[in-house]
Image (cartoon, rainbow, N blue to C red; front, side, top):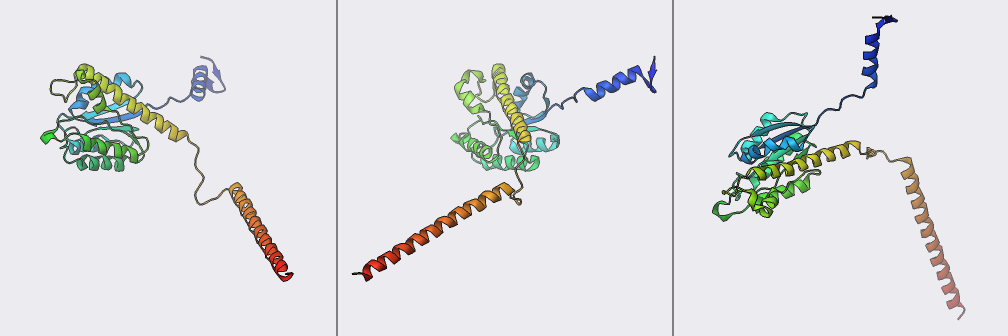
Length: 247
């Protein structure tokens, strides 16, 4: 091997590659927690999220309290997106249970984006999923970027994708559900990229010089108009007085 300036040729080539090649971009990481629906969905999820590192923790029959426990056990601060696939096994008469657990997840993850599917569950006592889905909608509205794959709407539109219990999807339905959730994850990742690339807002306690100048110019224009109005009113009063005196 020929050495140049104390370095071998191979070392120089390695150094050149290290300094010139772009750094590998970190793969986004997504945490998915849920119940039996997610157990059926998750085997298809990776097919629709190439390049995404997935952690799935799902247990059949779990309610949102228990799924929140799964979240606590599995969550890492490096997670970019959290899929909270919960609520199906919650009592529909008490939607505040789901609301409380969603709030606890949001408090833990801060500004990270969440995917929260709508719910199609059982209806004990004839109580439907309206309350729980209202909770999902209100949560999403209160938290920018939150993605809401419409699983309930998909079930209504495609009942043939469901098993006889009208709760769990068949294989085709699980694949379809995975596509919906994957679209939600992609929406979250796109939202995160948009936020990261947005220009920084000016500090609230420092007003730019240009804005100060515009404000001063507006104030001067307003004061000039006020002075002109006062002078016109004074002139009109004098003229009226002179006319009355001349009668």
